[in-house]
Image (tube, rainbow, N blue to C red; front, side, top):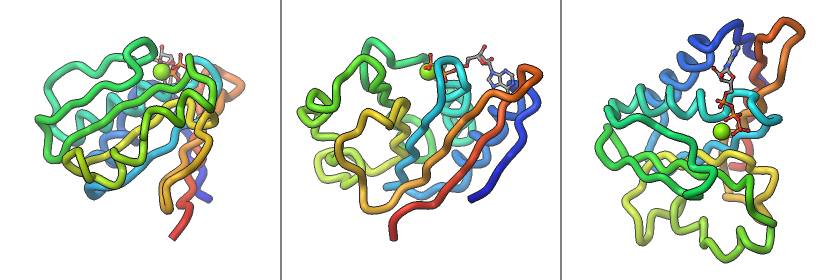
Length: 143
Ligand SMILES: Nc1ncnc2c1ncn2[C@@H]1O[C@H](COP(=O)(O)OP(=O)(O)OP(=O)(O)O)[C@@H](O)[C@H]1O
Ligand SMILES: [Mg+2]
């Protein structure tokens, strides 16, 4: 596990930019952390790193926002409003298998709500620090 100190919003964005610049199509990033921990901010950085000009907005109500115009597509999901059995009906695997969708980066907020997981993924847990800062824990999971 990797722990990264994120003193301010720019640091959270920069971590996202690095991920957006380096991750391959088919990568899944599962984002965990309390309300306001910085999940959307990190995905905004990923969009920047991919060269996406569109502004990345929280998909809390739309569930899925798709941004096709960067280096590879970005699929941004937010499961906050769903129960695990509702998540099952979304066929999330079509995003990471890239069968009916062009393979890209799949970033999922509130991944705690997922009833099943991809074979391999990055897990990013965002935590509040004592002084309004944040800390990210990054784990490479699966094969
Ligand atoms: N490293 C940081 N230090 C301080 N503030 C930060 C940091 N990263 C992000 N923030 C701020 O935290 C606030 C909430 O961020 P964000 O919307 O990304 O959280 P979230 O985890 O997506 O929330 P939600 O659970 O509602 O989806 C924003 O105002 C953002 O600027
Ligand atoms: Mg969010």
